[in-house]
Length: 390
Image (cartoon, rainbow, N blue to C red; front, side):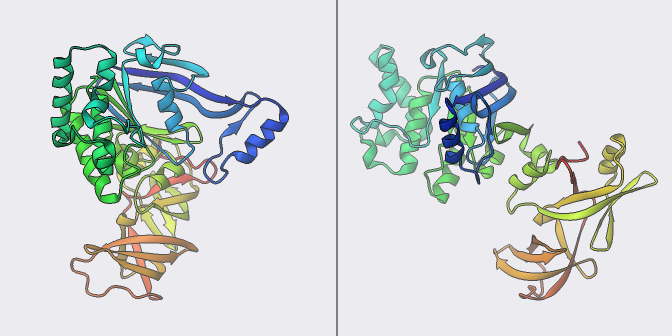
């Protein structure tokens, strides 16, 4: 149990010599990341500030190469901190060895000792501390019961499934009763069904052990279901911090809006107009008034009429008799709903339509109309990509 404070944390991987610098540029995966390259080197994480409360579950989420795992490894002490300060339970730990930080880490690849049994793997760190045998057995048994792996204690890792191995890796971490539990994409090696099961197990585990969690993932479903708060990252910078609902309902910018939510948010070139204190969005010849809450926020910021990027989530778009014109490209039957892939206003978009009460599913090539409520429209600056409400 501990608080964790990260104050202006920065991580730079040094590059020496012009030749190496050019080579580093070539090595960077351009499609995945736009990390800044300075005279110091490649800046992987910058200006990262976050206060994590005791027993809070924080999820760092973002695309590959955004700096989330590097941040986690700096908390663990596996990466040196280039700049800024890291506090665990109020103690500055920048130069404290990993073994003295009272943290435990669960890795993506399980990192189990293949020649040891499950019991021996889980007991390993306790034996290094020279705890009494009876105490070690008690702690391992308790952890095994929590994770439902008691029957596997005498087996070797190779005799276990991927989900069972990950349970053992988590068990090895929790027997230490660490102040902070770090988890680096622990479910990414599992298939979809096992990921769902293990996600539920982690939620149960969190309720049974009193510790602070920092969890890294690129999977937004994990972020939304596990986190008390989520930290969305891109190119080494924090894009937004908030509860899952806050980030989903009020994305700070176009990147967050496009990253959080599945299917992804629809974006259109539109016009925001202010008229007598009321705000409207104009798209495809249709004028939609924004909700009073949105109007109040825009009015407080004195937002003027302007061209915008309009965002509307697929589940918030409705088929209408009259409205914005679109053409059906593909329809995907998903059981309780149909995902309609449309072309509208020169853009590809997706609409989720419940099948309950639907008489006819629009066919490929069919012309349809759609609309949306002013409470679900998101207005973003054309210039900066920032949400104009916040």
